[in-house]
Image (cartoon, rainbow, N blue to C red; front, side, top):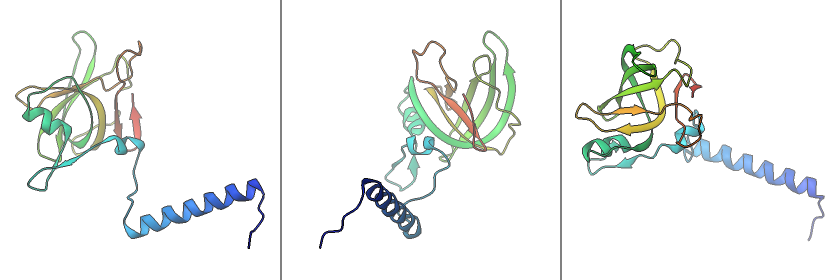
Length: 161
């Protein structure tokens, strides 16, 4: 038996079925809520020990630089601004692996991350540069010339770019 439906009714049916599928996946644990699209950008790999290894952890181990990364971690210390040349808001972030990186957020090109304090959980996108202390992430802002991948820092759902 064939049921006749208008194009609008077909679209409505597809949308409803999609919503039912998504709700079912959440309940079964197949999907987990994401705070932002940026979370989907973060790619974690499993190491042989079963612990998550981030792109920064691999770059640090291999002494690599010039890598665009999307990561998250806890602020462990807010440092004084670097005011030589372009001004940068600086803070140390401990990744889930335990590695600590310096974030150098250009506040001449992006807004200051307001009310940032130790203990805050942040997400960030930027360019990783290796050093023996853990590395530095910069370019956590847009590029006015549009020649470089833009980055950001996210705190409490607010993005600073």
